[in-house]
Image 1 (cartoon, rainbow, N blue to C red):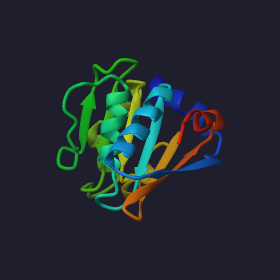
Image 2: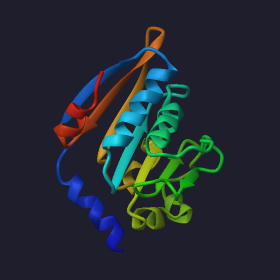
Image 3: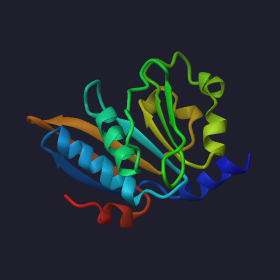
Image 4: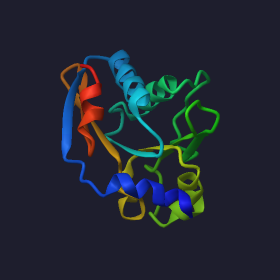
Length: 166
């Protein structure tokens, strides 16, 4: 598969650069998602970490809006994958692995096909199958902080982090 090999050029570097963002409300989470979308190049694998209700799907909604998707954005909690193949700049596949029984199920979900599409994968709950996933090119952890949340964004490329505004 030529597609998955393209992802590996980004993965040879550790995600050694990080930046934290204070997100006061849902609007700020949507805005960060939109900003990341505007800077993310394809192919890209973005891990979204955080407890239930931390804002992973809200971030994804902002990301998809930032890529030009104007339709509804639903959580893939039950479907496991929501494809957005008509998004400008390349397809986006939103995966939620919370209900995944075993990491080996990723093959049945068509992970290889999504990687071959050379788009962007937004993966919620990657820890459920991390051994079966390619390494992330961007890793975002959302945690509660006061009345809002904090986003810790890790990347191999410091330029992406520097391009994001507070």
